[in-house]
Image 1 (cartoon, rainbow, N blue to C red):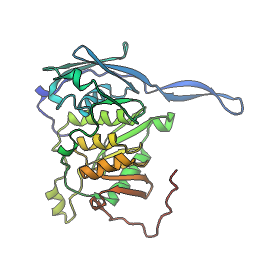
Image 2 (image 1 turned 120 degrees about the vertical axis):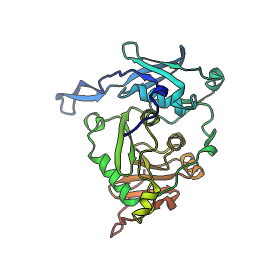
Image 3 (image 1 turned 45 degrees about the vertical axis):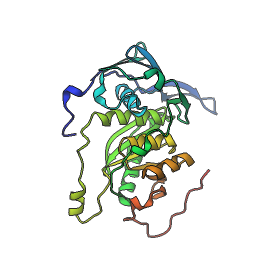
Image 4 (image 1 turned 60 degrees about the horizontal axis):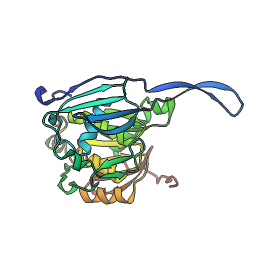
Length: 302
């Protein structure tokens, strides 16, 4: 990124690190022993102004971004400037958050919990549908060629999944350029980490609609979100809260996820593998500029 918000409003962040995988011994079907890698899942208890809030199960790749994104996506804070510091200490598996002026009505706002479909998270606070009608997503289209480039970039990405499996991945693209790739035991942790990172960046960076028009092409979407997990209502809401108008998933979509995508104007693309995909919501946002010459055989949906 070329610029950032005023340094004075950014929180102080620790730079806690932890191994993402560990080696274990296994026995295969022939009775042979070997060493393999598995994800190093760990617990992280979040304290806000000395009040215990939640325990997240995570790989811990970027714990400070994860905590910041979690607070933003739960709507407990409205902006990154409300946070003074986030300090993570893996020796005690704790993240200590200090706000600048406290969180208004925190007891009331965290009293109601909703069990979610998200592995590695478990629950969210408040109503899932609260305030979504206030979301205004940017104009623009997702090009088919851009979608194919995104899927291919993920295919070529070296990852914990390739070496150890058992994790979800999320990524943020600007155009077809990968900005951030995050893996975690739960897809919600991965999207929260991206949300936290994005909140620290300058949102003005990217090709403008005027530049795209000058190139005699429809304006492209500046941000596209990719996930290996299914598009549930929570994933769609979190994407929309980041100002992302198109989401691409290797998996499918749930009924409630579809309803939310239709309601907020988000282009939801699922079953995206190789050159196959299904656009579930707002296909008018999808520009078919790379249609295959012959129909593809659709994979069977379980």
